[in-house]
Length: 236
Length: 331
Image (cartoon, rainbow over all chains, first blue to last red; front, side):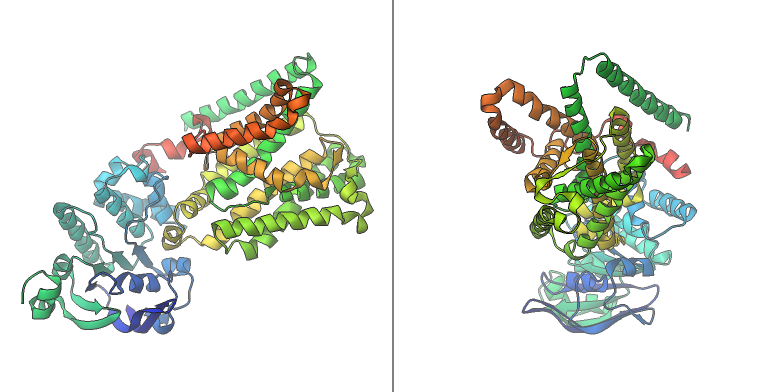
């Protein structure tokens, strides 16, 4: 579904991505794991056209999407749940969700999506009239995911959904991501919490200083000595 | 549904009552012609400031050239009326439309290159545009003698009255309210709050900014059109950068992202300026500048979010925002 070929990104003179290649197949959860500054967020932002690549190509369903505008990417079916949630604090929960459906026009279908999101996140329904800025961290993360789902994506990009959440909430969010995937949305997940990410993902890529150093089935990677030492907090 | 129509009805009644009150006060002389002028001016400022409210308050695009668009509207509408003024009310409506469209068009044309800039840079670019307009108007008589150039323009039919100003301001308030609480309005708010987030949602941020800027400039042009038909003499100095700051002060003082704040502050502003004239007396009239600068400084120090801080009077908020989730689901 998504194919990234030899992608390079520069920030000024600093090279953030050194020509990485990976792919995401339909129905999968694929995770990019790695330390701070490895280039995970840059990769997602480049897919969403928020950063411009200096080289390489991104194909979505076989079509090149490099160089498109961000809003076009969204209307093609790629939704991005950004790092730090980036919900609109001055709008209500309901308004944030409606904004998520900005690229869609069919009112009846938007209503159906809204009901789906409320079903998935009952707490958002309870708080739908509240200003989004007053939500707790976990609720904001739910809202960010709910907002992305309102665009009815076929591919969901998730950037650090576990950031700043308590372990119980992290578990809840990851369960939700799993369910979303089982219901037919392909997921590309970026995480520092490699342990959780590898548990729900089918495949994983390990990024280090802008390069993919390791890839494979997430079970295999979970067993890999190097990964265990570097990302799962176990001594080799 | 019943509640919604009920509220609309209340708004209409409230507006009519207010109008009747003002009308009675003017005809009985409670409001003398002098204060009547001030009232008119306050309504014009309201219209122009709502325009800047959309551009800066709601979309977050810092413009320092707002008065230039008021000026473009004033001159184009005034010139239209001088040329076609013999058709009475009809030509006045035509003139207002001309002022609006011309200022909006210029906003669109200048917006295409400059709206790619962010915050301070955008401010500088719009400030530059303000200078261009001033110089152009100063020398406009070399191309169209009727515009008067630096000597100012006279002879525009003075047809604006309480009815025109009051109801135009009312229509503008309703239009602005509908815009702000529409999907486009929410897109504007998203851009102000977090442009990257707006991009991620799928908002065409450039197009939305351009639309908001064009709309805001068109309102400035409408205010200008009314101005030209309220004051027999207009000159380029009326629309210079100091006036742009006046609009900016109104929007910031009222609270960014608050229509209520903009309207109340715009009216309060006009009356404060004139009120101070009496309080200070002719000798100290220039100290007004000190006083209102002080008000601005104090507001920024103690209440940075502005007087209304993003809040609205209830009657300006449409039902959608307050409805229960179930009602929202039923749509």
